[in-house]
Length: 225
Image 1 (tube, rainbow, N blue to C red):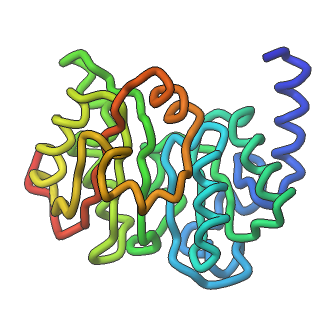
Image 2 (image 1 turned 90 degrees about the vertical axis):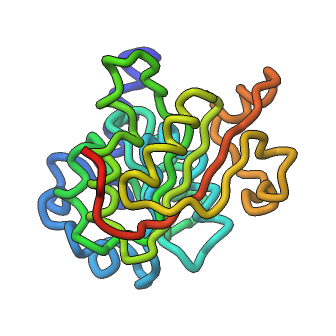
């Protein structure tokens, strides 16, 4: 992407009502107030972590108007795409937060979130990278601190080792597995996804990769380390 186009997208974010980022007043005040200060309707809040260009956030917001969706990503030029699409479609239940995932507790109060989606994260495959995996114990403890009791966490990935790791990590850290599959598109669970895809999901599926999916429920305090 050219520097000029990046600057254009950064300017779009600066002007967009549905983007919360450093430099805007809401960046330091939004915690605990998403349903009163950002969204016009008080509804369950759903996060997409590492949302990229926001295809999934926008798709979910379109499919479920009774929920409020927030795409989280550190890359401003990416979320600008989703932000602009949401405004074009008049999706007032979609917003975007520019921050690193490890700082989520600065933007959401305990129990403010009802669901979390993690869609095709970097699997961080080497052993020394384990602490950076988004289903590592410290991240799961963070998610649990933000979720309402019984809140849901969804994961989609094309990476079997990361998926196997997550199937072990989640139950060890306060989450109960509700459903999972190593071949979503040939599973009854696929009906729940309404054909919504990220760019990477469409690319992986077109190349013949199976899509792994799980849904889990926050059950209590972490037992991992």
